Image (cartoon, rainbow over all chains, first blue to last red; front, top):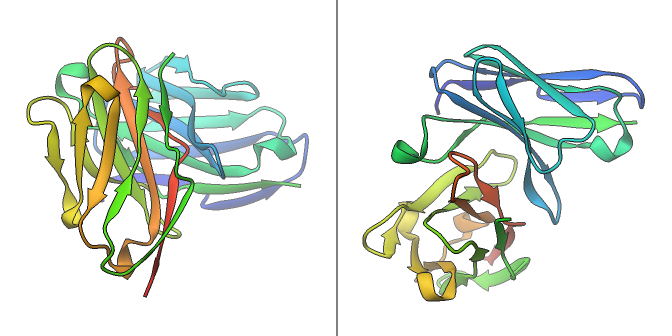
Length: 115
Length: 114
């Protein structure tokens, strides 16, 4: 597998608390993404980044923020966790723009439970 | 907006049966198309991809997919499935100006009876 790790792998947190998930890559890829996976919905894009300090919203960005201060790290923060954010979160990386786009490499996921 | 539809939510087959999973997308321009597989408890892995050229694409583990532009479809096929193909399969599209942003379908769960 490519050098992409997510932490933590599992987390249980209480409603209303902030939570930060980390994605770390050693591939020096420009693009990084956060998806959530829920039964019946497939994967839905939360936020993505196309460079250091360059981020944009995906289709389900409400309640989430991201930061990318270094090429290798992409952080996802749930500002005030709610039960509807219980999900499996996947980070993904890709090499480049449309001219050399080869799809994503995914991390192993973070299972988040909000109680 | 782009979208991807996978109409089969759960498919159950016996070993050695032939497989076809449907995928349709909505976008009128140039597209890149993907199939990803997720084995139980694992992350998504790329099965095959179409960028251009021959519309019949061959991937890993004996899978193939055919891009039919007139039908906006990219169906996944395998002539003879194995128990180890039990997994969830996701069709995905990258299109238009959304450089490097992939939209996924809701997935098809494939169960193979030994």
